[in-house]
Image (cartoon, rainbow over all chains, first blue to last red; front, side, top):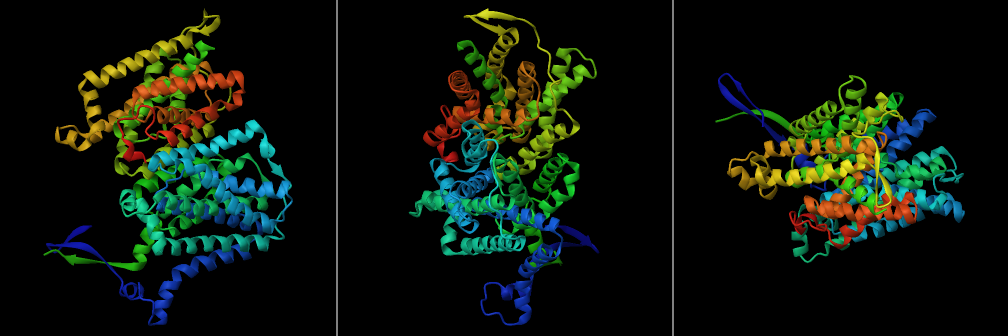
Length: 341
Length: 286
């Protein structure tokens, strides 16, 4: 807490919740329009804002929005996994499996787009969960190392065995009908993932996931099979990523080794670190800032990643709570100086 | 093949020792380790080629500079986020990204970047021709392991290292400053990385991308051997080293990196604390 001296008196800064926050929080019968808007404002502004950018701006920015939404979903899923005590350094694994699943269904079985995406979402989630099932007992940094290594391994495996197109990848996959469908689908999916997972985490069932993160021993002692719950969390989180992979595959009409690239693992973590972890909305906000920023930095070439790294270090040290926590504090609480007796 | 397997194993062990030291002492998983390895190579190269310093002087200078860099990294960055595993991993990995991609941007790409060997020539052992540099690696690695053992068992600083590795709070109450010791362990770990780079890099060219491979190799050896256990690291590097050479000879060299990755998965699934990981007991990991 900050302190300062005014007229020989010691003051300290006090932070309390705004009245409207206290009234609208946890009370399901809102008493005025003002309170309703107070709750709706932070939710509606980003939804409408992104929709405006996506529908009205030229085609180049549509592509940027697509990429942003994909990374935002990856970041939300990363945060969901970390809320369940699984620190993943390999979102690229889930993303890549989803992408190859969609590519495979489309290329070998000639299924249409509206079938491959849901199928790839589910099978991608299942395959990822199966792969990680042997190491589900691990936690913290050990789990992180395994997830860091797996996508690299799959990349080498595809390179060595020449399965699924090998180094060339699968090309000429079916595209979306038009870009309106594309943009609408990814935005809908992103908001569904965010609000759905938020509601899920807040439910009684979701409480178990959070308790696994906070103290897995105590959760086990309460007679809960934490491995079953971790597997479920893994399935949910990786399905979200697999959807992104499948979507990206059809959007670019291509899948190949680049889908396991480090970028798909690093950027979501960067977004979560900047936006604020364990909020789900924070990582989304972080991705909304980082991806367009990286588009602007594109002319610097590889220097882009240097900027990323620098921003990451600064944010982790300087603003460890993240932008979202900071903003929500400003929105929900007020500060005032009070005399120290 | 026996000889090459031995040398491959020793190279792996040498790569992993620095990472292992830092993790074993301070619990910081230094994901910037691969980057430090490559940066050390390029510092030495610059000192030799651009400033024309003698080989041994520039090697020593690089080791000292990297050691200081490691200590500063701890003081500036890691001290503030100590204990937050996610933040530690993110911060060190970000440092690695910055360093490696900056090198790539400045233009350290190509085949002309290679360090000179200490002694040229080769000898015949068991029917295989071996460079003297490779034998030198063998000798120096044994020297480093012995030196590390003596250091941690018979010097004041080394005993303090083991103290904070065992119990930070108790060692604090005995007048050991864990932050100071942890920054030393970070510095010495980085110096070991730099040493490994200077000894191993003359065998090939210095490339930015191999920074990530070095990190993977160091990680896999440390995980298989049990994080924080020096003898575990040596045993694991022999297992992985020979396995890599065997796959390269009998199957295909594409599969060599997969071997170490599979080794990690198997070990983590069967025995999560690694072959000899007694120091950090199971509850920390599972």
